[in-house]
Structures are given as structure tokens and as C-alpha cells.
Image 1 (cartoon, rainbow, N blue to C red):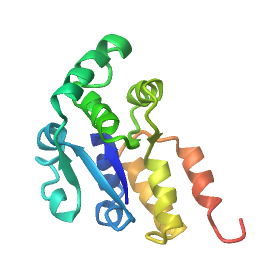
Image 2 (tube, helix red, strand yellow; image 1 turned 90 degrees about the horizontal axis):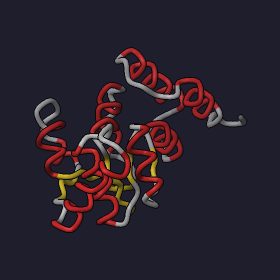
Image 3 (cartoon, rainbow, N blue to C red; image 1 turned 135 degrees about the horizontal axis):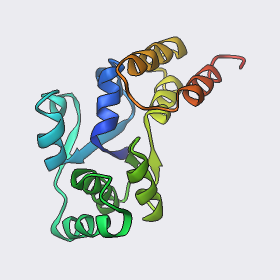
Image 4 (cartoon, helix red, strand yellow; image 1 turned 120 degrees about the vertical axis):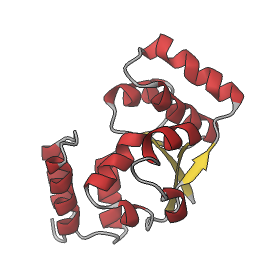
Length: 164
């Protein structure tokens, strides 16, 4: 089963779109670094590990790797974001992020990156959501002041309608 490492902003998008339960219905596993989870997610959205989120430890070598990334790519992604990238590298799997700085760093480090729009499309393709439900979730994310490529997201989702 595909393992995807998430940063905090993806889970915040899913919560804003009221899709957290649906996320864990996908035929894949989601994980994030333990420190990132305990510091940024668990206080506001407790219990995600019971829904299926795996909380993983970044090993010593990859903690060092993460600590070197700001020197290469800047301090805009947070240390916890860089830990998510390090965990994706450690586990040899894709990173889920919408953070443009983290996305650029991941791509430079040869880590596959996917984001919220990819998740919405994947939920529709796996029949976890209908196109209309995905568009409604997207509208909730917009109301919640999340930062997504709105026009592209709507075009992609509308393109999934049968016969489109």
C-alpha cells in the first residue's frame, strides 16, 4: 500500500474541507513526523492516529539531513516542514504538501510531491467523493482562507465528470 508523508498544511486543508474521515478511506497510508504531529496537529485535531494517520520517527541521520536543508533552500519552510521532507526521503515515498517552498526543496531533493488538488482528484477517482462533493469541499477550503490554485482545481475536478 502506498505510503504518503504529509506536512501540516495538507491536513489543515482536509479539515477545512471537512474531509478528514474521507481521507483515510483512500487505499493508501498517511504518515507524518512525530514532532510535527504533536506540535502542530494534535492540539487542534486530536485522535488522527486512531483514524489511520501513522506517526513516524525521523531517525538521527535524517534529522541531521533536515537540519541542513535551510542552508540550501532557506528558512521559509519551517524546521517541522523540513522534517516532513526528511521523513519522505527516509521512507522513500512521496511528500504531500501545498507549501511552495517545501515543494521546491522536495523536487530539488528528488522527492515526488503531491498536494491537496491531487488528493481531491484521487478521492473522486477512488469513488470516495463525487465531483460535486469535491467541489463543495474546495469551496469550504476557500471560505477557510486556505491557499490553493482555485481555477486549476475547479478545472481538474470538473474534468472528472463522466463524459468530460
